[in-house]
Image 1: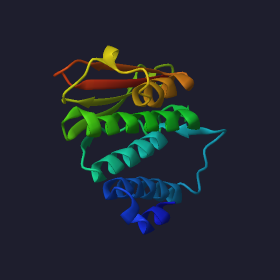
Image 2: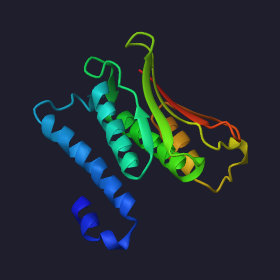
Image 3: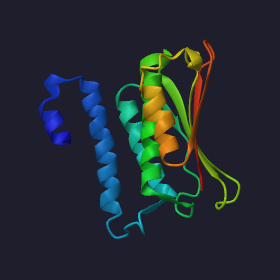
Image 4: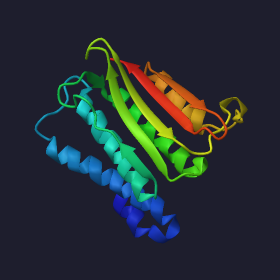
Length: 180
């Protein structure tokens, strides 16, 4: 798919195609390095969430957003996450960063991962923050699916919770949490 997108570069926005290519390259590099250590029973170590988030950050950087990404704590010894949770968290973070790029009026965002409490039990929290224009979440048109479906419902579907805090002129914080 990536090679096809490159071949058809003239048919779409170049930054989006390049961003998707960087995302795919990051994931392929990870897969090539991880060929000898398949995940057990569909669970991924916390480090695999880090790879997904790194791929998302690379994609957004290639589209012009400055993403300050913190290190994933305990990425080799952290809690095991279901593969679906890793995917949901990475894709919800991607949507939050895409919203910064499209709506915040700033070219800069912060992406952080924190594990609260002991590795088990505890909570995993992925946060996307910007200092942009902000908005009133209560005024978002219900027909708009990005925030509701691609972030809030996506995380709820895997047993987590997404909170969006924002106000006009105050930036936005999207907090994605999942109980480890």
